[in-house]
Amino acid sequence: PLICASAGSMASKCNRLSGPLLQQLLVSVDNVLFDCDGVIWRGDQAIAGAPAVVNSLKKNGKRVFFVTNNSTKTRAMYAEKLSRLGFDARQEDVFGTAYCSAVYLKHISKLAGKVYLIGSKAMAQELENVGIQNVGVGPDPISGGQSDWASVPLDPEVKAVLVGFDEHFSYMKLNRALHYLSNSDCLFVGTNTDTRLPLEGGKAVPGTGCLLRAVETAAHRQAQVVGKPSPFMFECVASEYGLDPARTLMVGDRLDTDILLGTRCGLKTLLTLTGVSRLEEAQAHQESGCPTRSELVPDFYVESVSELLPALQG
Image 1 (cartoon, rainbow, N blue to C red):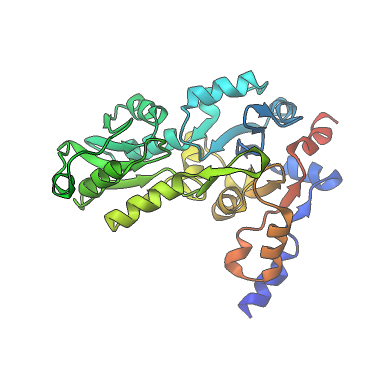
Image 2 (cartoon, helix red, strand yellow):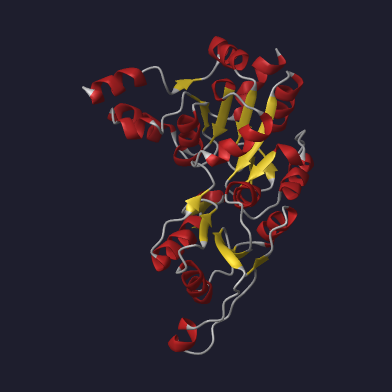
């Protein structure tokens, strides 16, 4: 019976967004959250029409935020990129996992101590911005043998391990993280679990999720994840700006991060097909009748966010 109920309620989801339906949706929301890569830009190019959509939403009195799992840039770097590509955006509108991790450690965990950071300079900067000292950024070359690795020197002030994207990830970093995390009082936080970073032309490189899984495996511990689909990502924005979930729209290109976050937080969801996920995947989840898979089904879809423009400029 559960499956039937679920399948029945699913019928109203995954609708092509256009005409009156689009007008209706715009009237029903005050806040719009956009994922970035694959949604409003690809690489260093804005998606055609995306800046006009964002800027028109703001002219129409909507609050717009940018919510990304990418931990390699600070809010300031994102704001610079957004304005360079023609978007009307402020640093305060950007919520990346580098910033959200710093907020989590400072305000939720009330961290008193340093962070061992497997991550980027941008993450180090966001931690420093909230007054958290960190160690570990940059290469950590290996030396000695296994007995040396087992008694690697540790900073006694480190009270948390934070794992984000780190191009210098290495066996020695994994080893250090294991030793810090063998103290059960040491906090363990990850930025996101995305396993691949999609690139142009169907190519991809390993994502943060691969690094985080390695550390979890070595430490025999699970990290607290701050990025999408963790509800914390929405709470981070909502607590600063007092957002009503029922009047908020999440726009994304990934079913397992953007759409799932929206479903979990009670937001309206819109899938755009300019990035990772395909319409066939969403439809397969919908037709499965499985309650868990139904969380990955968006309320609406568009080929590109540019399809919102006529309704906004009308």
